[in-house]
Length: 393
Ligand code: HEC
Ligand code: HEC
Picture 1 (cartoon, rainbow, N blue to C red):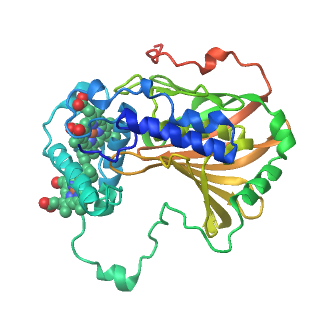
Picture 2: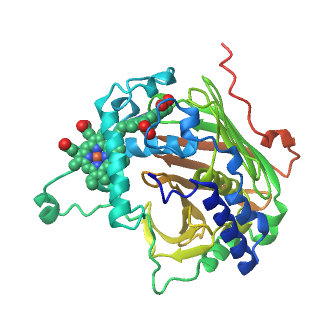
């Protein structure tokens, strides 16, 4: 089988995950749901081969993870969807056609990559599309003299943070952060909010679109963006998560594994008081520079090892300035990055009113105009969203 090490491939591994999570709960005395729900509802998962028509190699992967692999392909090769698919967004059937030779090559590459990892790295995901391709269609064959002598050392930082010998414990960074945003007592008193603002994409989608966020402690959250093509809704109900968006192959996409974890983290971060407990293990790295300012770095790995996130705190203000979460896919990790700014006080708690969200195939700029704290929110707001209604005009 191709993805013998794939995390959520068969029910047995799901069960062992749950057991592992349970063990770590008793071990650390952490509140039950936080960890347990992460390994939960496999029943929701729709497998790629059940949803799509022509899946030959990426089988046994939930549909949301399948779409993540498409994002990883595009990013790793510096391609857009159309480079392998002769299709556009309005005709999803066309994506099943095999009329691009590149799509065939890509299937062979998935097999090759899986074999390399299996045969030489004990099944660990050490080699991915990105390892060779580095954002181009043809991997380089010859070492570049310019790189050796001219030195373009601005290689990205590795996404795995290495524990620095003299670093403070992660708990200390979080304590300072909680203090900076108002203290744990005030944090505990903020239990819900409704936010309004705008969201704008980049390029052709740079127009500002109205946005609403509904959030309820400890971890329910719904974000709605009113786009010209209909509403785009992301919901985490405390257990399960969905994305309902127009112009997508699956109108209401249930999130699983790393993507579900990501939705949970986004929801937890609205009320960050217990965010540290969402991870089983922490590493604190050397400080880095973000926007010319020094930042402390803490990286958490989930109890089941399936998900990872990195937190960057401004070294002076202790505010959270960047948050990157990673979801795994059969062909490489996919990062989603938030850059926060414009912290303002809401019911005594400092909350970012501006952030940029960047992921493999998109970027979004969110500006909030108002936040109403501690308001009653209809529970239906956190229910599974309906498929997006077509635009009104
Ligand atoms: C490098 C080539 C490549 C790129 C770039 C790529 N894909 Fe794919 N895509 C594939 C391959 C290969 C398959 C079939 C996978 C299999 O057989 O398991 C596929 C299958 C699909 C399918 C399933 C169609 C069906 O019904 O069988 C969808 C939907 C899809 N891709 C969407 C996308 C989107 C959206 C993007 C851009 C974000 C994208 N792809 C970018 C190679 C690519
Ligand atoms: C071990 C290195 C390596 C890995 C890993 C790798 N590739 Fe490749 N890939 C290559 C090389 C080398 C070529 C160029 C082959 C040639 O020119 O004949 C290539 C070519 C391609 C092409 C054809 C590009 C074109 O424009 O004709 C596609 C598509 C592709 N790879 C997709 C992928 C995908 C998707 C993955 C991850 C599943 C991947 N590759 C992983 C080495 C790799």
